[in-house]
Length: 497
View 1 (cartoon, one colour):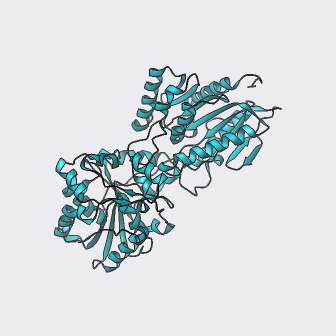
View 2: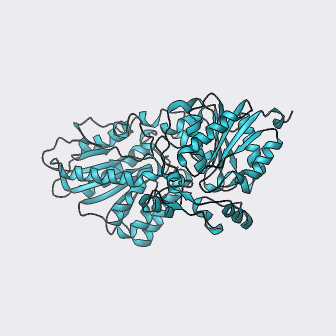
View 3: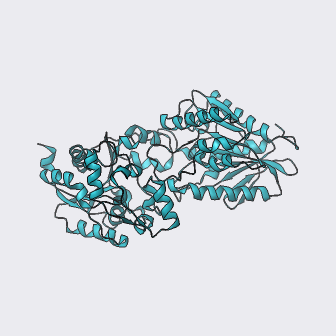
């Protein structure tokens, strides 16, 4: 029996932000020919009614199971509707679109800096529909012919800013609804890449390895309904039948439970706002290092990074060396949150420099993982009080598929303005290729401008090695980076070992 003979499904297909239901014509016809009921959504001009429009389609569907397929903006109203019909929705398919969190706005999905800037300044502005040559600003156009791009523009209308700036409200109700991800590899996403995220142990990715979640890949760009409708239709039919590749859960403890690779004695801790200070036994104002955790991390995550063994370990090591080890909990929850996290960091620096236990003229900033992009303003305009910056297994440019990152957060572009500011960079030799490429680009920029980058290499270590690989090489890399940072902070007051 063919898969098509078993389908008793209603598909609700939603895209956006500029397009309407006619975008799906080639897929809708094929799904219908396979025996499915199909509803391709054309949303009204009022974003507050979009979830209700999806609800009416769910309620009116004749098929016993409903599968929601969300592409780009279309995923948001589908999720808002699905949370109210969890008993009716059999599966949610994310088509080349990452799962949003509660409070996310669709604007975070858009990689176009011009649209980001326009709606930051004028949230109600009307966003013009792209011309045929402009679609690459909004996603990979791989696989599309010039005729396809002409059709995309012909099918499109300007998008009200309120559609893209209205936050999505979610509850935990959707956790029980099965889901599928269809990844378009030309957009930079792959099943192997998602598996790496799950294997990292970071808590926000573990649900992707649930048995109810399946994955598919299409070798095309962001608009597969035009570039490969036959392959997309096949993937949707298999997804509805519960197919797809399953991921392997992380085999180690969650990242936030893993022990630090070095022993570090507990030090007195003082919590002030978003910052914890781990205080040395030494008297008088002391140099300080502000530790900036990676991300993005989910909102409401507990424990927060300042209570993770990893950052407690670094802060306690610093305190044991006579410095103030400070840990910041910042609000990098989504890819569009780098400006917010940067504001949190600036506030923390001000708090730190105003503390009487801290020498305000001897501060270092130490960035980890996805916080690497937050280096940019400190490289672009180094302050006299900033004695060095450090970055451990950092992300130093937006990764493939990272839509919505403010283009101001570009460490390599800022590096020529860093002057003699020391940069202590710890590189994991077994880093993922995507992150390794950003580090290589940063080092190329450093060579080009003569920046003062000190490289700490850990050739046999992976991302997050300082809390997952208790090897001598891992411990040695942490010690070497620590020595370099401490050396740059030494000055008027000796720093004891």
